Image (tube, rainbow, N blue to C red; front, top):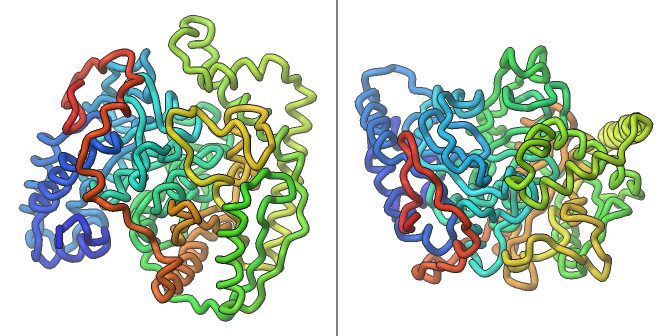
Length: 503
């Protein structure tokens, strides 16, 4: 059994007991990258030389230190939106194709401090806009279960790398569903945490809760381990100050029989394909016999669409208005669409959006006075070809813009509750199915415990267990995934080209 097949929790224990070395683990991960990445194009710049030096240091520290940090010796993939000191960080954007940060962002810095070894960057859409991880700098990321299909986004490179065993852990971020959607489409776990638990010192609007950083793993325990290592306040993130960072690791055992669950197929307003509805109903029905109650929610959150339009446009103006004025040709079509939408939004619209978001948030909180957990699908469709920028139609309903097909997740973003995508078997098309699990605000540890209990149930029902991609089927490179690259990255610092690919 290859080392990379072990969970992050198992690998950390094996390192602690000196049964494996961090160098051996890193070498195994690099070998997997070299074998598989040409088929899925999950990676951007790599940092193998410095990673090996870090692994050697981590190996020397085992036995010399009585207590090792939580992620000691574990290779880490970092989403290309997140700054990494000395390692190319392009955000998939042609203007930034030679950008090498001089320091880590707070998230990456905290993970390094907890012993993680930054090894490579993972692919994302241009500036993270959209749920199809393709850009003109690195190309497209293919789904590990069928590389002709999309891996989701914007943390698609992280999800694909995890699913194929390139890393035990990867970072992500989430505005409209960017942690949950790729996790669902690639068969891994993605957690959108409660705002403020993981500090974000890069957020332009410091008090906005729309965007969060978060962990991705192959199972719930791994995700909880990374979440624990990620949490803490930071003076440059006001949302993180004064928040109670309650422990989420180790994950406690939870009895499903005492849990009160509710569910919605579409929040009363989202277009959802029949294939997804049937898969979701099967999971709800299977769970219904294991819990105290399982009730349908009579929700209609139609106002969520306009509310998200306005709040998202505001955040894009904050981040990209200067570039839009000075170098609009460097912005991708999705970013341009968001910035231009803001031109027609008034102060009155913004006030209405605040009111609508507050109504949605309070509806969720009242619901959690009665229920422990709310279930919903993550995506309205099985994965579609990566050549299609976004889903233009869902179940016969034309989508208003490039992100309306993400509404199953952006409704929850507006509520600000923690939400986790749990891999739960396959749909009728043979692709991974993700179950969206939504918990009470700032009770992320409880959400992880409930997700672990459902995950354990899946171990006894092979139809609902985490699916695994066929690695043998990924033996052949897919050059088409890089066909949309318009400029080779200007490599700098410690950056190297993605393994198995010429830049």
